[in-house]
Amino acid sequence: MQLYNTLSAEERAIMIDDAGKQRLTLSFYAYAQISNPTQFRNELFLAWNSLEVLGRIYVASEGINAQLSLPADNFYVFKDAIEVYDFMKGIRLNIAVEQDDHSFLKLTVKVRDKIVADGLVDKTFDVTNIGIHLKAKEFNELLEDPNTIVVDMRNHYESEIGHFTKAIKPDVDTFRESLPIIEELLAEHKQDKKLLMYCTGGIRCEKASAYFKHKGFENVYQLEGGIIEYTRQVKAEGLESKFIGKNFVFDHRLGERITDDIVSQCHQCGAPCDVHTNCVNEGCHLLFIQCDSCAAKMEGCCSAECVTVIHLPEEEQKAIRRGIKNGNKIFKKGKSDVLTFKNQEETHGVFVAEKPKTAVKKEPKVKKVYIGKGTHFFPKPSIGQFLIEENEIKIGDTILIKGSTTGEQKLVIEEMLVNDLAQEKAISGDTCTFKLPFRIRLSDKLYKITD
Image: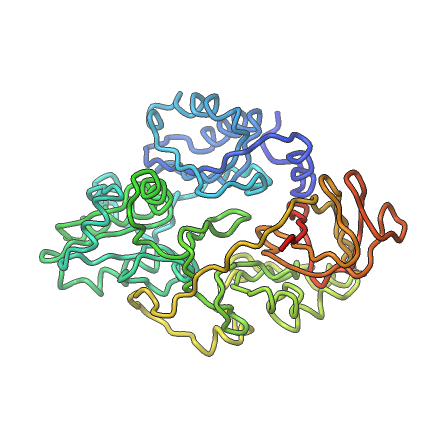
């Protein structure tokens, strides 16, 4: 009986591409009393694995928190499968704003002490005694109330690339850090102000609203369904989006575009940018914001040291990594000492988000045609391999390579091999390779610029 993922991410990506099925990325959560989380976890894995569900799911005695993707054809079967549990009947499923077939490449279901780590040991705290849920229109209206204080319950690396204007954004790495900070900051306003909170999908606000009610706050509100559901309602009802920038998401995409405003900067040079990436050094994987220019210059790395490491033979890289158990310490989320511009601008504490006067609009989309997909990357010679699925490319063409981790990289083809032979042109069905100043992934797409 298989209870754990057995395929690598690359193997799974190939299977997804070969299947040719559109996948849906979605998330949901539910607070409930689960008597045997391990048994519940095993039941979910067996049921969901057969439905080709991939994702990151946490279960605990207090409920479930899930971010996942599945073939669109299996959506209603999946919905029926979760609604066999009474506490998930009629549950809201937050469908992602932007879809990516490779948003998740493994099915991981883990048992945790809590589905949202809060650091609380107060047995009198009732997580089900929550605040008032608000839909997008109601949320927008309350934002304009002068007696409202709006708080971003996400971590700093999430709010940095997108937020509601005038929101208090705690400069924290974890949810548990934000609770005492907000409580102390707003201690004098427990009765006279309306506390309005938001997060990605609602799960953190659900617990936070109960916590602040437990601490004596009388007027507690939360955005129902979080930023994901807010965006859906804004589009469906033709409302003004009070959220600007991108919504950080916890899958391979690392962000969904909500508005064209770019409210953050490259952590290495300071250029307007809101593209998160992970350092390509397998022994680092630091999460940070990197623009296209720095990505090319630094080869997708966070530091010169990591650039040096990725050019070492693979065995030497493995030797460097061997025995090191970084855990969460390697995910400094943009606060690492190696990030030059970020360290110059670094501030700590709690700050209020205003819509920047110099907010940069996203560049107009370039005209392009789809060519194919990445199939392999040879790290030592730094060569990318692609399968041409449509149209054609030739030497001298400007191409665009796009992926959730790679970002958008443009370059001109100066030379290439087609089916292992030097050729001027590659057409549908061909396999072509050419040198790249950056690493590609199997999920990366290849386009030809037609402007």
